[in-house]
Image (cartoon, rainbow, N blue to C red; front, side, top):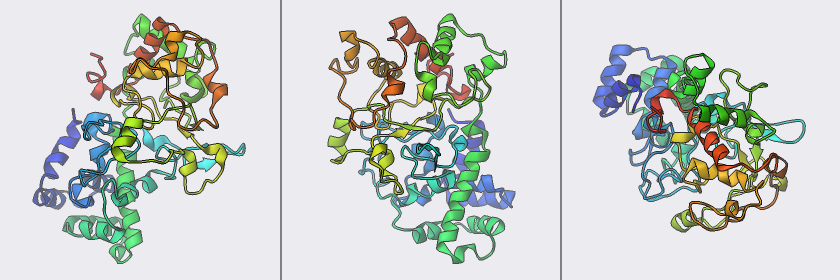
Length: 385
């Protein structure tokens, strides 16, 4: 499903002529409207086949729902139809609430965009994919700006918002493009509607099932689980507009996705936060940003490399740290023992080993609770009615 307000936009983007007609009728475009057009514009990729919405699609929880040569969601194919990434495209849902990437006084890092925080904010994030050779594939900023100037109504909108001389400076014009895209993500209710069953429950508009109620109790209780150590931002459980991430970075021991590596040819270890261009501290190796759990039920597969296909498997993965049961030491998707962490240093054992082992009923309840966090647009896709 696509939100009604985007359907006209998708039709408009089917041809430059139609887009031009819209711009003529609606000038001047507001900044977020310009950003909306740019977000869906495939002309910003080398072969004109890929846009921001390709990997962050409104129809797929703002994540990548394409088949991707059999790697659906685990990694994304680039504009060339051959290049395959090494990380799962994170959902753009609620991304606007992430704080600027920064280091705390205790030395830990928080915030930013991408799995490794290498973009400080949404604007910087939007500058990345068009120039990434395995994503949208443009060779340089000048090419991007030339593509923009193919559309006279982009020119009008850019000059209206950024000044008549904006296209005289390639760097400034490129940054302006990203600013507009970020404004769309910040302004549009598509990205943060706060209308899931959980939100409606908090407003007295939905009654939890017994299983969902148990899952919520377990999720927010540090006596029984470790979930909210990382997936609660508000100071108290049950607060409105909880984002279900503290935006911190941790190494939880995710194994390498070996089949994906065989397909994309990557041979180096994914060092996570240590890959950030401004970080050279080995203590950050293997750490990745805690993702939001909003829309988690419709954005499989899971973890930064898409190693797990099912949400229940993710809960069992965490549970293995606290269970002595031989059965719990097996990955249910493979029937084999859980693989070793890709990066064995810096494991967040304090958090991972917090709480008792969970029973099947409790695991199922946690999954049921996380399904509650699905925006109403996607409730059917998450198995909810």
